[in-house]
Amino acid sequence: MKKKNKIESEHSKRKAIFDRLVLKIEVLTFYGKGGHLKCCWKGCTESDPDCLQLDHINDDATTLRLPSGERMGGSGMYKYLKSKNFPPGFQTLCCSHNQKKELINRRNRGKL
Image (cartoon, rainbow, N blue to C red; front, side):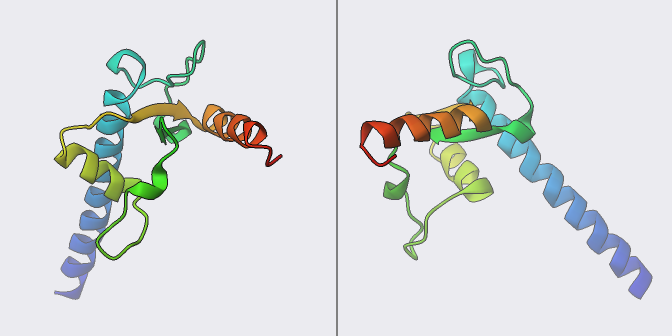
């Protein structure tokens, strides 16, 4: 019995990892350039889901909170956006361009 439970547990873990990846790809594709799994930065062709991130277009990440007051992120954010039929205000950016956007914003605010 223990062996079967361990196998079932491993299968459940792998399925959960797969399901999270499928959800991530679905959300990043919706918010990607032209509805494709791609960075929205002009001229960027990055399409590797491991290198793509969800970006708040208006830099208002702190406005979305869980009922407990904690910030939302990762698969919780993806589930939320899907459950709300993919509301506007988000875009897919590669890690490099998401970081570049943040640096540009900090420079413009005089914080760099």
